[in-house]
Amino acid sequence: SQTIHQWPATLVQPVGSPLSLECTVEGTSNPNLYWYRQAAGRGLQLLFYSVGIGQISSEVPQNLSASRPQDRQFILSSKKLLLSDSGFYLCACPPAGSGDTGELFFGEGSRLTVL
Amino acid sequence: GQNIDQPTEMTATEGAIVQINCTYQTSGFNGLFWYQQHAGEAPTFLSYNVLDGLEEKGRFSSFLSRSKGYSYLLLKELQMKDSASYLCAVLDSNYQLIWGAGTKLIIKP
Image (tube, rainbow over all chains, first blue to last red; front, side, top):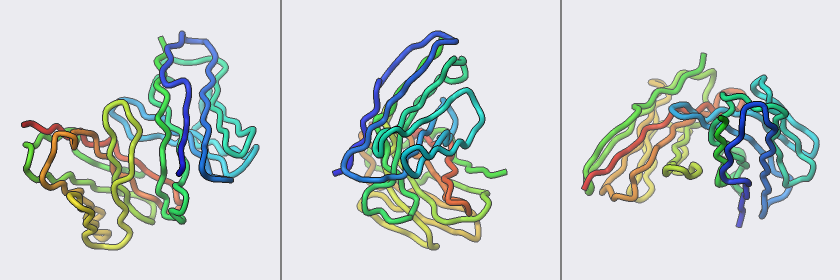
């Protein structure tokens, strides 16, 4: 079965520090991968998506970046965090066998607090 | 702009029935999803509607009216474990998911 591992699960970082969140997918090959952010009281915001190795599309201009060095690895980074980067970061991909309905399967999430 | 509206919070009693509404205004429509999200956890898929009508899945049902831009999630025989946030999301004409802010459902004994 399909799994998505995200780490770290929780982190507290000072403003201006760098960030690296990792996502690894198992149980599927060549998946479309997504990074979402969920802020308190707001809907999920799509940050980046990738259809393959080295292919990244950015949905929202900001101080974050993403990379896909391997088929099943998706990394979210920042060189200098802002207070507004605080939130719950979710990695997602379509469930194996779901077709093109748009359904997503989510990882456990990484909760970032910027102080 | 694109918009998904859901109530912020609802309260219901264990064993009862609750209906969570969702209205949407999006550029095109390619399906509507309901997800359940327990506090501190990831969302999990509940239902998918692309045609008008009611889809039933055990204690949960989801209804869609495309002409009205409206959906609801119906939860029957409520259990304490149903306490969670319920997220409505619409797939627009570009096949991008537009998410509502979620409805926090509180179940009281």
